[in-house]
Length: 385
Image (cartoon, rainbow, N blue to C red):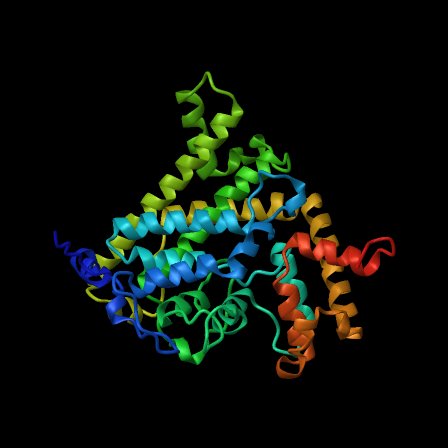
């Protein structure tokens, strides 16, 4: 019996909205490759990201809590999965290209160094006057240059749209300088925009969860945070026989659902009001149309201010961050003073890359665990080298 199958591109054409980014319309890859007979270019990008070294290292890279603080706190990997899950839900509901959103979501934190934003801040200061360090730019550097998996070219050779989504990723912490190659005057496609919103939803909610689990936050502190309190009271009344653990989890689930619903509703309003009928219509707006309603945006701002004051500036987090910063500065200095302490395969690339950038790349690629072990090997006289 003859089996007739449709290509991924044909399936896309049937189900995507007119303002969705179809893989057949991609600007393509830097290095010419034959595409797969039934996997679209964006599906292949997603798979390449999942299989690369930088993605696997996210398992032991910090979100807020250093990995040895406990097994149940979020890491860069679990955060990335949560962002991908939310982005896929939004993309599917709006008939956008789910594969493209997923690929961008999975790649959005590849360039984060160890120890969260502390690591990024320290590396940026150490590289002052030498190009600095910004994790979105480094994610792109990983995708275009540092990964070595394919014959004939360096990097992952991702499509232009995924690379654009990486470099234009923008949240409260992220303000990358968009390279001219990626049309800095235009907004990214809607698939990339929803990843930014999904990132914000994910980290705000899992930081509440982790903060409460670590006892750095107390539920009583959250009583004046409207987004938390309105859902928490409703959950307590509905499941009054359950304990706080269930109430906490259900409240966070409800907040995420509320935010995702608000985001989808507001995007549809923006599409209708702006008469968006194509990908180019999305781009020429020049600003994101993936946004929350004014009311939800107000509630989110209140929540973010609360987390900054009570969690990110908690004395335990500051102590962890300070210790991590001193560790990274010590590693950078010892490698700079004696570059031959670097692994031979890393040291061999010094002439092409430059000493400081090479060291920065090497440290940025470390996991929290590897950085801690390397510090012990280099500074503890009783540790095996």
